[in-house]
Amino acid sequence: MTSPTKGPGAVQPKSAKEARRLERLKHGSRAVRDVAPARPPGSPGRFGQMTKSQPRRPPPVLGSVGESGATSGEPTVVVSRRAVERLDQGHVWIYRSDVAAPAALSGGEVVRLADERGWFVGKAFYGAQSQIAVRLLTREDEPVDDDFFARRLSQAKALRDATAPDAERRRAGRLVHGEADLIPGLIVDRYADCLSIQTLIEATDARRELLADILMTLVQPRAIVERNDLRVRAHEGLPQRKGMLRGDPPGPVEFLEGEVRLVADLLEGQKTGAFLDQAENRVEAGHYARGRALDCFTYGGAFALQLARRADTVTAVDISEQAAAQGREAAARNGAGNVEFKVANAFDLLRDESDKGERYDTIVLDPPAFAKSKSSLDAALRGYKEINLRAFHLLTRGGVLITCSCSFHIDDAQFERTVLAAAGDAKRSVQVIERRGAGRDHPTLLGVPETRYLKCLILRVL
Ligand code: SAH
Image (cartoon, rainbow, N blue to C red; front, side, top):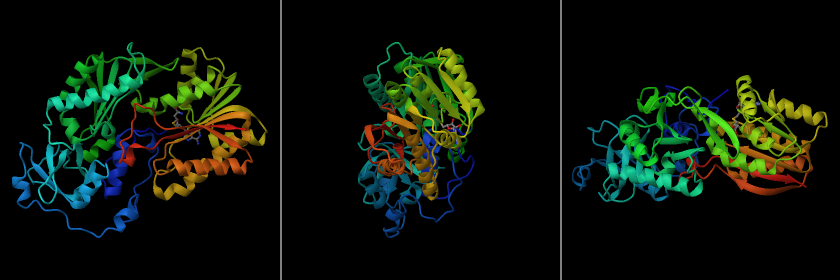
């Protein structure tokens, strides 16, 4: 079984493209549950066309600007015209080839950004190790001090309080989603009254005590667990670490998803195993469930248990024995006697069931990312088409399909075209009931495509 926190380990990014891929890894993205080997340097990347059409510019130089531009205590980093354009388009990452930084910077500092003429552009975290040298914090000329971070964190919390109020603190959700909350390199998940945090870059790692202090004041958790045991941190020159930042080891933490009781072991378990980005979609899927249901790629059964509340029976399928065992435990905890966990390859099971002429009223498809890189796109699209085609064969008239893709390389339109092609081959007419993405606690930042990856269609066969 793969996990969203698994990365290619100590491999150093060889290109900006590779660095972006590693960045996505750090965000615990489901899009990278499976990780492909790095593409050889020089091969076309995601932004290949964009960069190819632009003439190569020499990197910016510090010149006199670097020495004189600052009006605050922060060192100045000069960014190229291309970088300024990128920031203007909403992005927050600048690559090393587009910056000139004073040699004295050791990494982790807050720096002042200036364009090549010395004009203020913003303030940012500076990284000395990663190919992403600069991560924007603010476009305003404001102090970046303890109050700044307290404001950012309380802003992040305000969104969650508004969209998913949980006064009794019995639920789980992402409190801080890194770049998308304009706190690059920081992930904070809340499970009931406990927090789990990841500081993924030099700047947030260096400030983790400050961030923990702010979170204690803001959220008053029973415990804060640090899950910095991600191999991908090696790219930032950061060590593997896990343990308590505040409070005592919390043990397994029970939380509610909708009405379903789930458990997370924040310290020992696979922290990201809850795939919180799908939480809202799982609860919503439960509303459509009826009759005979099938949950493919079930992992710990989180979709299956939502379906079980309304369906007569649920078959939950995963290729991993460990996942199925976890699912059975979860079913027992919820007294869900109508769920059967099967260890099988979902591709085979879908084919066998359809060959046998079986019928289902509700089907969930939530596979790992099939498109791990652009080069595997065709194979990935064939994979998505195959499972959706089988599902359309299996669905009764009026049956509902909840079909998902967390492949960053496949966008909404492409996914929808693939699902349509599958429906066409199965000769089924299909309604779109809902077009969904990650939950509201995983916002995307406009202009930063890397923060948008999850697609979830709720469809009905007519
Ligand atoms: N639906 C889950 C998350 C799924 S993660 C949730 O909401 O929590 C993807 C799962 O697919 C993993 O558990 C992995 O073990 C499983 N998997 C990967 N390839 C598979 C295959 N060919 N057949 C069945 N399961 C597979």
